[in-house]
Length: 428
Image (cartoon, rainbow, N blue to C red):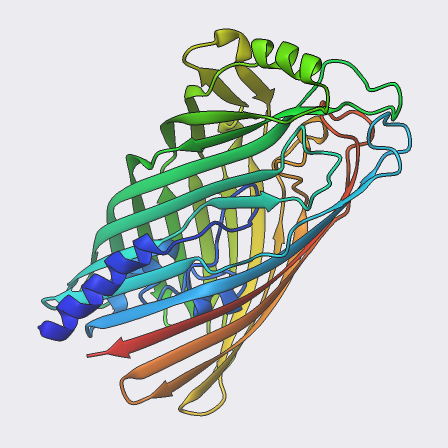
């Protein structure tokens, strides 16, 4: 019992170390190394504790107490090249700062009787971090953006005595924190350099806010060779309260600085809201090829809820910001395979094509999203009660041009990402 209490504490500790990440929109699908190696095609497999995220019904298959803890190291890069027809961006380039994020995940699953299983998981289903190197032509749009999201989900799953059908569900407690940072330009161009001078920096930081949602799943095995899984996670909207700090940037002219200071809004409280989408996953798995588990999944994400990013100033309404987004719902297509090569070693392959939800006119330095294609390779090692899974996952994004219609900076963004996932598990 002491060991189970210890690993429950590990789940809670994961909440305190969670970081931001980079995904379609600002979602993060890498919540377990085994599933990640299969390209995220796991809803009809769902046979390790990360099923709490991918398809909660799957934990009913687990008949021993298990813990599983891990994380994904995410390295990504982005290069911006200004459009020759953009007055301010022409001839300019920009690059992301070098960052490595390691969003964690942790799960504990405990069978209760012969048909019922309890589990609890901590994971990071969404996150965003964009940070541009100085000096940066897009600093009036965004210098840094950071959305951290933490979720805890207790869950129950039940299966029939023959194991053919399982259902599960549970509430999800989600906490999130937002940081936005950009410079404020002068309303007039400096005639000597042909650029807008910087007059202030605005740094917005919210508190940790929360909301409740829920998640349900079903897993059906019509025969020993086929499995069908489906999972639904509800949408949420989190309202944030925070503060914006306005720091004036000296221009070199005392008289001009005095005039600017009189016109800048004061540091003050702000509010904003972020809508998180619902997700529906449907997967089909088969074992018709001996010693191979192959699965294909489709995920629908309701990003169309994200209409705009609005920031309301509590003291100076004239400073309110509204940035239209008008995102669209998206699909991702995932294919994965698991092959045991020895009693102790498994190899895994996966691929994913993920649509981006962002219309061209909304592409900006805040989040320059694009359709992407990914390939994953992983291994699993089993020794006694211990399990270790490791995955290499490469993502390549289509070049994204604003085509001269962006309401923000016009140019082209080129993005790539590399992810390494590792999970360690123990079966009692």
